[in-house]
Length: 69
Picture (cartoon, helix red, strand yellow):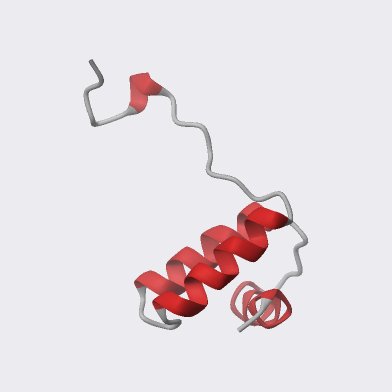
C-alpha cells in the first residue's frame, strides 16, 4: 500500500479528502491497530508520510499519564 491507496481508503471511510499528512498518519495507525494493514505496510507508510512532513504530536507533560523524572 502507498500513500495514494491510503488516501483512497481515507476518503471511503471518512467521506472527505485530505492532504494533511498527520491525519493520514493517524488513519494508518488505526488501520494497523485494527489489523487492516500489516506491520510492513505500516512502517513503509510511516516512513513515506514522515518524509512528506508528518510528525508525532507534541505531548503536554501535564496531560501525560507517565511520570517523568
